[in-house]
Length: 95
Length: 139
Image 1 (tube, chains in turn red, orange):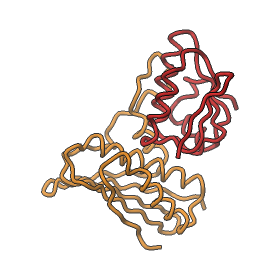
Image 2 (tube, rainbow over the protein chains, first blue to last red):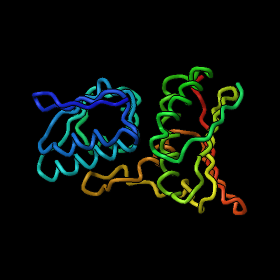
Image 3 (cartoon, one colour):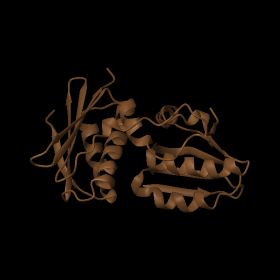
Image 4 (tube, rainbow over the protein chains, first blue to last red):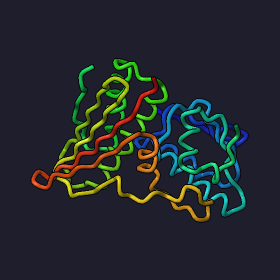
């Protein structure tokens, strides 16, 4: 189960498990992001390379326009996946 | 505990069933949270890789999982497919900045990094590939 929503201040909130079978909903939301914003992982328990690829593509698009995503509240397992993926160099990650 | 084995439809949407199957195993085998996360991720990456790249393969992909002491053994078997060795896929440039990075290639890199051994075998007569994974569990 995966849910994604955007709050009135523009931040994106992820809930549940972001796997390859759940990526379509996330793509719809991230495709509408055109400026810097915060992505809150507090309620996300799992992510695979499908989700990482979507975040990377969004970040690349935003960085080209002078912006970027700030990722916050990653659980230790997801944080480790980001480290292995080399995403410490790619994203602003709030510890 | 005995090996758990099941075939899953060659569709990305089969992931929900796969995660339920793995959840049952994790509970029965008393697997720690960190290893459970890794098991889910490794199986998803290998399974989706087979679904996407072995498009002419059989209807199901077989998954087996077993705990032997502190060793976890995973196996995925795909039949009627061409050879494709996932252990030979080049590692993405993870130390590079965003301008040098390209999308893709992360899944198999995560697999190789998060487990202790990945072995690929291909049998020409049956056109069957098997990927075997070993992970040392938390003591």
